[in-house]
Image (cartoon, rainbow, N blue to C red):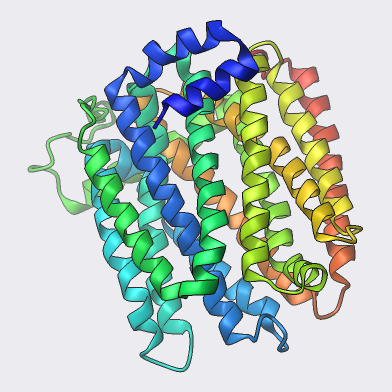
Length: 444
């Protein structure tokens, strides 16, 4: 499965890169297992997203009835609420537990929960039973995502992290394209229920792939120096809670004391405001231009993925030559311009090109931020930092989605998206000035 990727990289990056990558990455069976499992799982995730989108589209007559945009906001609330409620605390648990077992357990549980969604829909005329299962499903995501980010530096050499993240991004984006292209068709032709059953199978495949990873976790940090014994059999509940609180504080202290980590987290969370605005506010614009919604959204997600692949290839070839500040601020500027231009698109082809440009801007930002955190944070605390990042990212996404969902009934959708684009330009300028003044975020 990885050979087509190596050939693609050789076309864009020359033979030397392919020679270096193949033995260092995919000959590493642990990395190959993680990459393969995530490729199939992310393909299923796109089916899941489009299935839920298709369900809401069916219930709202393709977003024609009043309040349909806010229905998307409600779905977004239940998707993001687990990260907001549990994110900072789950990072502590991920750091204590065997990361491989966390990944496998989460995928097993998610496989079962996805199958429950069609049954939840039959329980009531309301969508709230479905939203309840979605809440549980994305609670497992809160465990899975920081564990996946935390385990990668233990599978590859530190100096190969940028390439490993770029290759992982390429795989994730390729799966997104394939899942989006086929997902829209599957949901439109076979229905959202069938798409969810396929998603459940993808989680089971991921469990099988991850089981091949050879991973030996480091011992959890010993906090006995703080007056708390580390032997769990002898500590009481109060002491254990205090220990967990100390670990959470330690994670926040790491973020506060390290400028590069702090900027990386900000770079992750700010684009989510633009994503929320496009999801909630741009849906009606897509339907107006394309004439239908489910397959159109699937096609646009595929275009976003193609743009992200282009951005990942650029990162593989040029990422080590550019400073992190140029990559991040340049991506913010392009993303802001793309969102602004989206409101002027008069055809579906123009929308597709603009969404491609968005993907090309977002991918380098995320790769740079992910690599910076992995390089700057030790294994024993990495889960807490990634959990805090996911908590912050989803909190802003939720706030933005709710704000846009409530505002579209009073403010023109195009005006909201243009405002978001302008905000991203301002953030790009502010980040660039700050990074230059503090001399942080140099080359990867």
